[in-house]
Image 1 (cartoon, rainbow, N blue to C red):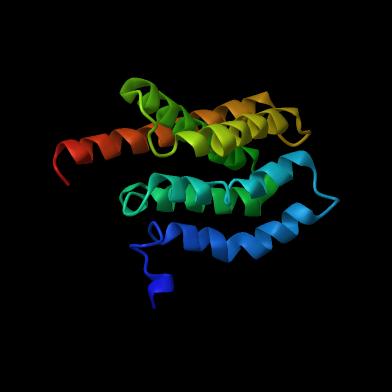
Image 2: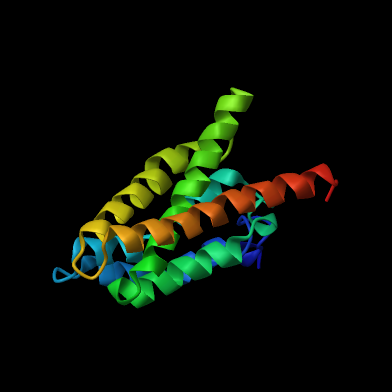
Length: 168
């Protein structure tokens, strides 16, 4: 059916987020969840508008499986593994920085800029702050995870550029 045509729906990764939406929504609606846990669960649905903003076909060429899997794992692990959550937040920040830098360099609007400013950067920065202040987290855990996440986000951009330069 055309409804499930992945070429028209920006790859399969928005479908992963859509499938996880009921679980994520149920968790985010709980009143007993603390801010750090809330942010970790919000990492997954934050990828969906970015995939839509980037456009058809682009999402399939990005290392989306790693980023989406990290977001799922961060939500599931919660503050039992704060470094995992910080890494998920770091990938949001890394991706956001890359989109802002590309737009600044190319001047016109580039796909991903709006969602980076509206979702990825605020969620990533807020998440790292929450993890750093959380009793099970701390500054060190937030910093280690953020470094891994930032490296992953920037490496995905570099990989995409190298692949484009080779004509793939």
